[in-house]
Image (cartoon, rainbow, N blue to C red; front, side, top):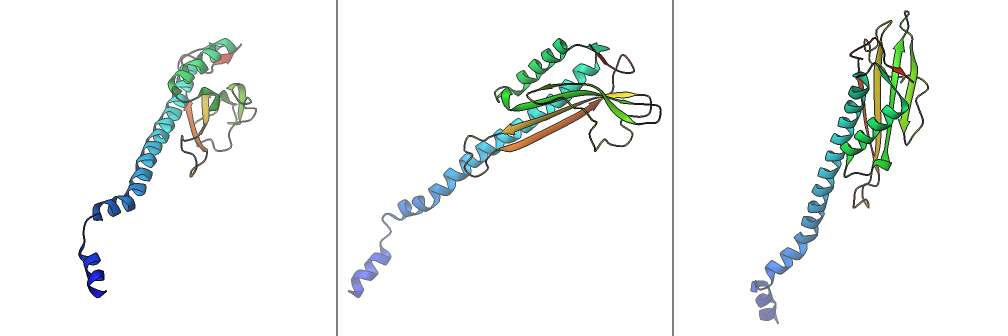
Length: 173
């Protein structure tokens, strides 16, 4: 009986199969985790790019219309591709400061969400000096990984301020 137990301890056939069975689930989990992480990083990069692009395109104009902002939103959706544009909430607003430095929203347009009616609470100091304006673009994207069992939906956010280039403020018609 003792001899039989000793022979089992010395037998190395099948050791590789046992090691693979122990390591394989970890390797598969790591593979899918890295794939989802890279997809999330790519989507976050696109969200940041969309916010800067939307603000920049509006800031290049002296006046925009609802049709213009719709075209800009369509360009933003092209930047987000292959991620679903329906998950993107994009808002572009003109923030204007009066002579006393009080900031208000002069106009706002939005895709998949409501327009901004008040300025953001966390405007960095010096961004909107008295008697000037800025274009403020904000993007929120609900990213759902393909394997969302562990993470669920992750909200990615990007915002960008841009000074009007050809006028003191961009008007909306």
